[in-house]
Image 1 (cartoon, rainbow, N blue to C red):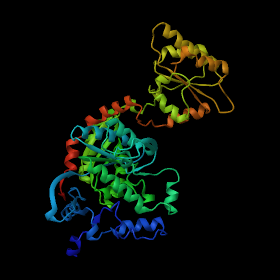
Image 2 (tube, helix red, strand yellow; image 1 turned 135 degrees about the vertical axis):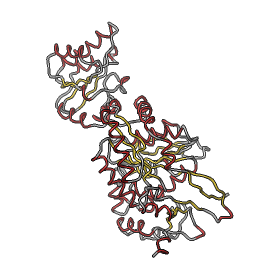
Image 3 (tube, helix red, strand yellow; image 1 turned 120 degrees about the horizontal axis):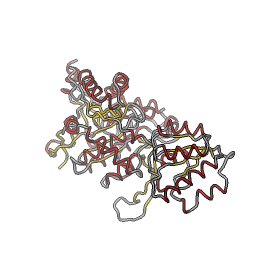
Image 4 (cartoon, one colour; image 1 turned 90 degrees about the vertical axis):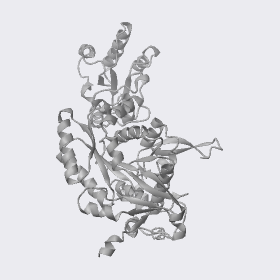
Length: 491
């Protein structure tokens, strides 16, 4: 038994180009996706020596430290490529994989802050989102060598577009930063066998290698919690294990419930042999900050042997929607005032107008200047009063930052042509007004339930988020936890 315990299975990253005789590649294409996934997990494919790709071998000593409960990294992998006589020694950091406990906990914001901090410490930081969902179109060269100026359109995860453009990651090609997109119908295609497991995983590995070869360190952003993607055999935990990455888990502020959510993700990571590099807690209430930092640090260290890498206080502004967010929410465009699309408004200051015109004008002058008002499309008096108050303040050189959302059910109510003429008058072109084809109740419900997302165009919020998050993250500890490993590559 002792001999068996030391004969750890060798996990090799599958070649994206060669056609090796590994077990999962020889699986019949008619095999159900579930059996394909099981075959992938159980077989740990190996290659003939002539086609050998870099190996990632679990360190037996680290495994024994894991069993001893010391919390030391339990999935360290030693990369080996050519025979010893043809190897040169150098150092390469393990990739960092960011996953969250659920949606809307600030994973992308955390990734931006990590990219910013790492960029100050390394010349080239790579970024990849192995499995994405929401995607946007981007233009890429038809010929990557640059000999041909022709461009083509591909779709990549929206966070990939944000990170690449914000940090100018010209060394990372778009196709390799977003190798797998799970869009509408993808899961059904996978279950039906139209998408093969090995093809999907090969694409991820090939893309990661390209980013890794061009970078000093690579940050991988997951999609949701550690288990997202399991139905197609590509969960965050599994992909992180396949790439030899250390996991950083992100959760919202709290104590008991936060730890419980993190525990579910930790167990899945452990199942796949993924090291937890640490935890970052987001959106911590100011009055609970010291308590959260103290007790979560103790809990993680005592129970998991991992550190709290960051404890970030809440910044309400980051959760305030911009008018551009409302455009996307209601699938509409501003009828006027488009120059103010990235002006943000507090949901708490949302004001539904049900009063008389006189009372509305009184509120306009008494309430905070940057207030979002909602009225029904039938309230011509409120719309005209809003336009009139804007004109009055402009004459007196006074600021006017209010916005008006006009709601009304589609095909039943509409703004009268006369009122629309006034809204679109060139003299009033910078008054922020939107029209939502929903009932007032539904419009309010959608706004209250929305979670604004960072995007490439809202540069102000992106920069504010990075500046707020970055100082609260312990980068020295992160780099220590993802320490340099000696590697050997071909001369």
